[in-house]
View 1 (tube, rainbow, N blue to C red):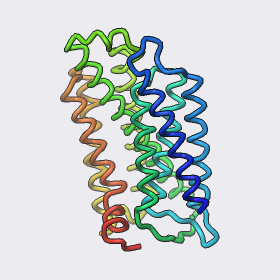
View 2: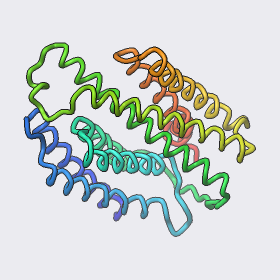
View 3: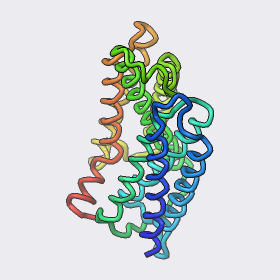
View 4: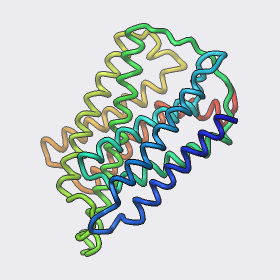
Length: 268
C-alpha cells in the first residue's frame, strides 16, 4: 500500500510539473522557475523515498528490472533538473518528467518479484557499476539534447516565429552542450568497459556476452560521433540519428535481456 501511495504521489507531482512547463513552453518568459523547482523537488523526493522502500526490503535488496529502471530514471531526472537551474533546458523537462510519470505508473502493473541479492562491496564491481550507470545517464541526457537540437533546428528552418521569441535556448548553445555531453559520456563509457574487463571475469561469459558486445558497438557509435565532430565538423540530422542509435544500443545492452526475462517471460 505504501509503495502504491508513494508512486501515485510522485506521478501527481511529475504530472503537475510537466503540465506547468508545457503550458508556458513557447512563452517569452518561459515557465516559472520557482513553481517548476517546487513541483520537481517534491516529485524527486517522493520518487527517492519510493526507491528506498522498494529496493531495501526486510528480505534483502530487490534489484528487479523495474526498480533498476526507476533508479536510473531518478538519476536522469535529478541531473536534468539540476542542469536546468544553470543552463536552458526547458524542452527537456517535460520529456523527462513525462517519461518518469509513465514509468512510475507502469511499475504498478509490471510483474516483478523480490530478487534478493546481497550487495558485494568489491571495489572493482562497485567501480564498474557506478561508472556504467553514470555513463548511461550522461549519454541519455546527450540524446535528449540531440532531440532538442533537432526540434529547434527544424522549427527555425521553417521560419517559425514562435520558436524565435520563445524561452527555448539558442541553437548554438544546445549544440555546444550536446557534443560536450557526448564527449564526456563516451569517455565514461570507455572507462566502464575498461573497468569491466579489468575487474570482472564474466564480461565475455555466455550470460553477459550480448551485453558486452552491444555496449562495445554503442561505444563505437558514440566514438564515431566524437571523431566525426572533431575532424569533420559533423552536425545536423545525421549526427542526431547516430546518437539516438547509440543510445538505443546501450539501452538494449543494459536493460534488454532483463526486460525480456522478467517482464515478458516473468522469470525471476
